[in-house]
Length: 330
Image (cartoon, rainbow, N blue to C red; front, top):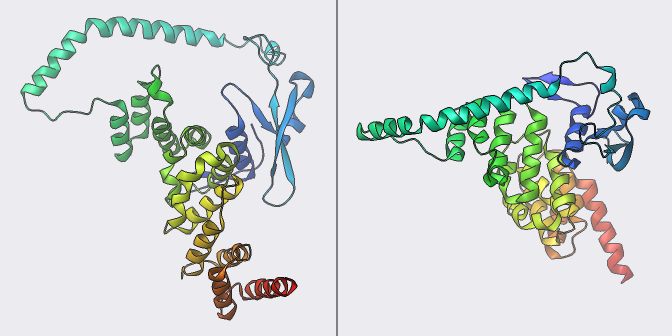
């Protein structure tokens, strides 16, 4: 939970409050409520006890704390129910659940009675030479996503709700893509985060420019801080990506996980300095990374950067001066 000002652009929501909500969501386990200081300062604190679980930096400077609501022993009112007690005139929320359960039970009975009829129709269709449809809900969902039918794709994945396959990383990624296509950013990110924690290699889309830029910082922190070194093997292959954003994100994950090597830093810096489309900030960041690498290749790149008429010349010359003083000291 978070609150604050948001802006809408081309159908997407942007803003610090949304970014913080996504980060809080990535830290929450199933059934937990994680909230930001903005919510905590505006709520009735006597009605729900909380505990601090961490801090996150703000884009404009400063830090904000994230808190977890403490659950009680009563499963019907895990957070005390004091606010709910004031809403006695509301309809019973369990009524719709009971109706849905009854409808599903009736549907299962009806489905059993029509199973033979459905089988007969399938045999007739096969005999008529109709093209077969993939039986796997995952395949059907992937095809519906390509056809830009995210709602139908989610309906297919719902068929796996009671099976172990529903919790696999591949299914979580498909569900996240469908949720994102429907504009449900928070739900989509939680599906991507769950997939990344189970299998970091499931997030192949991190390399694509179409991967939501809003999610990149949160995914980087999730992979680096929570998944850790287990993500290194899957992420390191992105260091050779032709996309600068993917290379930069991959190195940040390795740095956060404590798995980055001088070779990794040298590979990313080399790619960014040789990229004719690299921005000024990218070149400066590449030179700063080179300053941490010891070796002739790094020295050569720094000397080249110091002699070019491009961004990063002062930083490159400063790094060379510090290297020279360090060599004289030894």
